[in-house]
Length: 515
Ligand code: ADP
Image 1 (cartoon, rainbow, N blue to C red):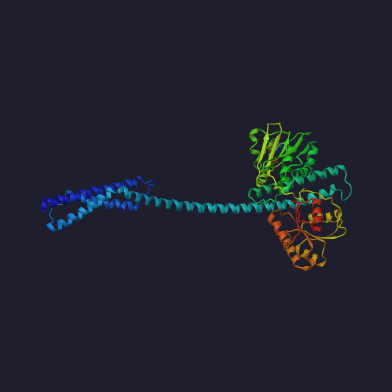
Image 2: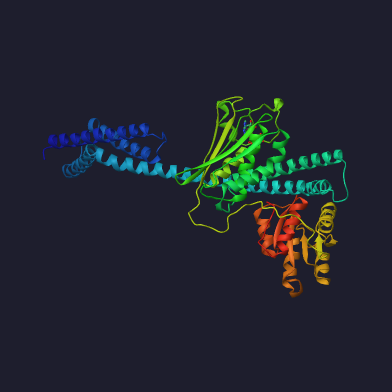
């Protein structure tokens, strides 16, 4: 090959190589610059430098290298340079295709980084969740403990004031009776507040279980009227049960339905002026039954209608309040109705134009049932024990004495008392009583353990045991029944409630409780 021609080929190859390599370096730098993540890509920088180096070297060879190579070596050099130039040029031409792969690789890397980031966030969230669960558990335990401590003294207050108003120990003057009533009502309000607080907390934590059965709304309304009748009579308010007697049964937990209606009818009475009327109506709507409580009382401004369902919310400002209450009733009503699969609604034409609260419940499946329920069927209390012996195991003195008075003075039994679990077991073994009233939180040996041990010994295996406790969570109740107790009574209780559960248990009927 003539020298000038070789030289031309050589310089041309280097020109193509320089232009292509510098072009690629520039493209890489631009690509790095335009990256979404704005991160410096070490590999990209290395490639850009390599192509820059190759391009610069080729550029220098185009202009500066004196053409001095011998003929044979020049041919090889030209061939190598053309190969390099060809490859670089082709790479430049096909860069769009490679760019897809490069972009994809970049995207994959970005996804990986993003995924790792999300994983870290998920771990942090899981930790927060765990912490929240722990705090929720603490809150429940705190509430359970506080309510236990509050219920215990309330048991004595409610129980004794009830005993006194029953005039068990002789007649009282009308003033004394009136004061006893006031004590009883005050204590009952405190007890209701504790129950409401526990209910809200359990409902919010999804820890309330329903026991739905075909239930007569009209019967439940009758029971509710007896519960709120004292408050209604005090204001001369008439409560009308206008639920049609042929209304289909609802599929509901009777005690919870009663709780819903006590709240709504109680509010109707509370927010009506004297000589008013509260009316309960109901009707069928396809697969649902609706129930409404109407009053002609103070009414509710329209812009408050949605908020009254929030816990603790009350329309009246705290300083101007004329009506008592905690603001928890409607929150409980809504959650209980929703737990049954129903919806609630509040309507009012405005202030002083009355209110209408309604809710729906599923109609019960059409199976004629013999066990229709009236949840608070109150059997009259008579001294039915006829000298039978009841062992009372209770460490709290006032509650122990109250139970003794109910057993002896109301039920006509003979009470034996002791204040710790171990002594309770000994007493029961020595002389087996007809019934044991057993506190659960006892010193030395707990009530659960007492029940378990008594059940293991043939002599006491079939003695009737009623757990009486201020612990009100379902797990404590279930643990007591599992340990061998026949029934569970929650403190505070009224003498009538204690008397009724004793009667039911001794008749060997169903397990019952006051709540
Ligand atoms: P509480 O009755 O203890 O205040 P509720 O949750 O039952 O709590 O009711 C929340 C608020 O809704 C009440 O404070 C009252 O302002 C309003 N409210 C409820 N029922 C009625 C009613 N029948 N008439 C007028 N206002 C009512």
